[in-house]
Image (cartoon, rainbow, N blue to C red; front, side):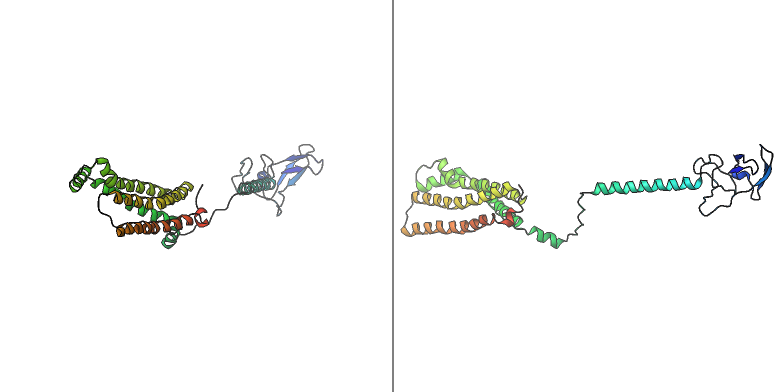
Length: 279
């Protein structure tokens, strides 16, 4: 603490811990005036410590001080400065977090899904159409594959020669009895691939499915017409009622297959379908 001579006003410092509670009598080195030095009574705004927070000086006892006797720092000012620095640092951290969050999209709340909700979501028309096309494709593919495996051109050729009494070529046998199985098999593979593309809600899948439906609408009556021509050219007796039945069969089967497929193709252009299809 700072002291001054009451006679000559000479000033100096003396460590607080060297002054007992009852005071200390000292003599002025300038004028030899003797006087008693006592510790000042601490006020409410004085911080008393036994260890300096700046230099680490300690009294190692019960004595406390408000100003460090070693480095002379005021404890109150030092502590308040530390608190102010911590407050400024905290404010800067908060400001940095706010700036980082500017423009950020708040996280979406977690939605607990249930089996019923998942089932309803899977009932979307895109999924239903994809599943239906895939099921039909698998059936046609299986029928075509079964026909290919079971096709025996030589046996069929021998049977026809025996029935007609004339030579029948292997190409004729394949065109009449083997080609349709390959058509079914290839159609099933293509339809299954298209259904998978459409299930992924890709734009190319939508276009491919639309093209597949139109091709089917044309292909079904075409196959029946070709079959009718083969029937007409076959060396067997024909009747008027037979012609009529074959023509009605072509019309009926074309309408049975073509009308639902046409309605389905038209439905593919509804907003409920096109709005979920990805580019």
